[in-house]
Each structure stands twice: as C-alpha cells, then as structure tokens.
Length: 252
Image 1 (cartoon, rainbow, N blue to C red):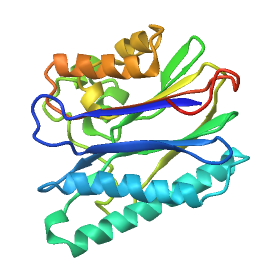
Image 2 (cartoon, rainbow, N blue to C red):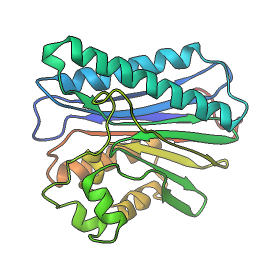
Image 3 (cartoon, helix red, strand yellow):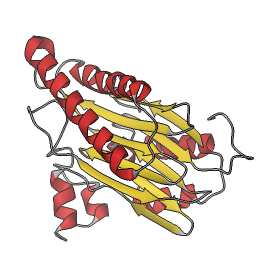
C-alpha cells in the first residue's frame, strides 16, 4: 500500500482546524483518517488533533484484522470512545465548550477496506472503472441532495452548506456509519474534508484520480483547484492505493 496525507490552510482562514494521518501496523495493514474540527477559539484544532492522536494510539495497540466484522467492531468502538473523551474534555475546559469534529477513517487491508464516518467529510473509492462516494454527508445540504430537493452543484453554493447534523464530541452518544467494501490491486481510496468538496465536484475529483498522476501530484492538484476557486476553508486530503507487493514498499 502507498499513501499520502496533505493539508492546507487555504486562502482565507488564519489557522488550520483540519488534521489527519496514516499509520501502518506490522502486518502491513493501514489506518488512514481525516478530521475537520469546529467550534470556539481554536477549539476545532483541539478536537481534530485529539481525534487523530487518540485513534492512532488505539491503532498501535490493536491486533491485525482478519475479518471485516472485527475491523468494523474495532473502528466503531474506537470512534465511540473518542467521542466520549472529546465530550468530557469540552465539559472540563471552558475554552473548548461546544467543540466538535468530523471524522472519516478507513482500515485498509489487502482484501478489504472498512470505513467509518461522522459528519460531512467524505471517502471516495476508485476501483477499476468504478468511482463512487462511500459516505453520505451528515449535513443539512446532504439531506437535501439525498431527497432530490437540490443538486450536488446547488449544494456547493447553499447558504447553509456548513450546517453539520452529526459530529464527534458534541453529544454523549454518536451514531457512526460503518461499511466494508472489497478492493483490488490498483484501487484507491480518497478521504477529504469539505474544504475540497465545497469547491470541487465529485466528477472533477474522479477526473483527477484517473489522470495517471502520482498520489502526491493528485493531492496537490485537488488542493490547488480548491484554493483557485476561493480557498475559504482548510483543505485536507488523504489517498491510499493498493499496489502489488513487488511494486509497493514503504508508504510514500
């Protein structure tokens, strides 16, 4: 497996509330995550950074996964635990009250990918000629798109496009979407915050994923495009590609 993680503050905001990372266990399985923090003076930074650090720690302590059911159980339990830690932190620190974060995370093995998500950050899968969004946006405009009331393009300009219906850390309990899919050699997974998808449509992301660029070049091009169109938000992207062992090696 090869991977890249890139984050950019954008052209308007003074600081970056996004975070994320990828990490490989001794079996060559990879965890990748992206988080988009929100709320209060720099509290978004705290929420996304805590989420990254807590999930990476849980990953390093976890055993390798042989079955999707085990990966789903671990990912769901881990995210629920992080939700409680974020909520407790916000209750005990006045400067962090009301903080929260989205999360998209994936456990990537040679045979399958297990994804979990809360909020309006997204995961896309490119598998052969198939390119699809694996996640549903937990947002007001996401619900409007799903019900057919507005188009994806209209959602990008909707005045309430930043209203998130689910987030980590804002309530004592959180509902997590979990799914496992198969992937083949050459398949890629893209995780991103809404700093990308508010500016770049899914078909444009697909075009760049199919352009034959390296993972680093693809991420750079997508970030450049989001910034070129205004860059009002932080933009964060992680891409993982399943490559044959002979072509692989250490993540790039």
